[in-house]
Length: 225
Image 1: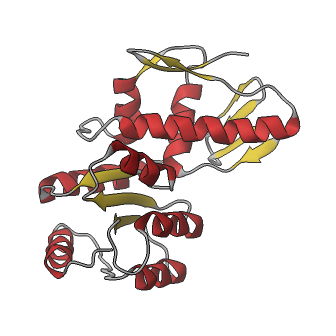
Image 2: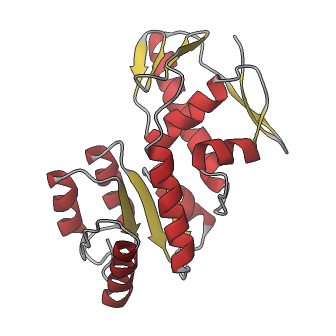
């Protein structure tokens, strides 16, 4: 979704040349109509669309397509703008101006990760938390927690080694991509969102919350009960 004819045309042509099927929408309303009518693997969303606020568009796309990867393209370099975009449902962001090669690498990494099926068909239980890897479902106290794709992947990675410290570098490699060169702020925002969602369900049931501890200067740990 890009209203600038030059940028949108160049992105569409470049992505098609690398084997991707592209639907280019120039306004927020036409984009929302498109995502309501068909399924997409990945959406590139310009936050500066002329007819609706890009953050609101991001929220609506996420609600319509929970499994779709959303990468926002923004000229807003302020950290708070980036965080708001990620909290609205985006999986990643690129700040304009960017190189096409960088965008293409991000697209490939996200599509590669979202297509991976867990090799181990297993269920991990940590206290009140249950992570069903085969069904890609999470529950706290028996109640399902609805997670986005990357949130599930992140929790599954931490749950694979409950009680163990997992470095930021390992999480970025395993959940995003081994050759990731984007900002690791994406990781922090996803951990924050994951904590909130787990806490809401746990508090509603009155059961202990699954705890994800921050290990300053290292990474994160899913604590044992």
